[in-house]
Image (cartoon, rainbow, N blue to C red; front, top):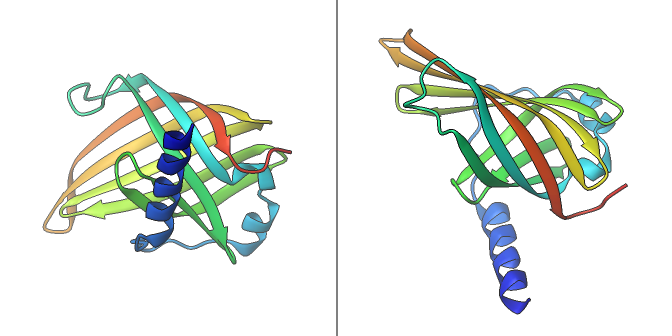
Length: 160
């Protein structure tokens, strides 16, 4: 148990001490204020590939940790498994149904992630739509996509 708590503290420290790299992300204050408190916290997320146009690029299944936190009107998703740390944009909130987007850039690649999730206490189910664009001279030269079914289980944080 002590090892698990130490690991959890290390993950939280990593997420909170990392710099946030987000470009061209606009957060709607009204949408952020509508997000249920149970959305925030540490989640174990299982993913299963449902559809893709390039099975060599996208893995068939995965397990991740998502730490969702809010400071003022900015929501951050930190994934210590892959080092991702990004500001997310809330597109829709309808009670416990939430749609959010995050965009990341690395070199000539842009990664757009749109998550639709239905919260249910300490669990959620949903889909994760991923688009990976490759740019050459400022133009999209290749676009690849994947759709995952996702399931989340709350590890820590408020449950209401």
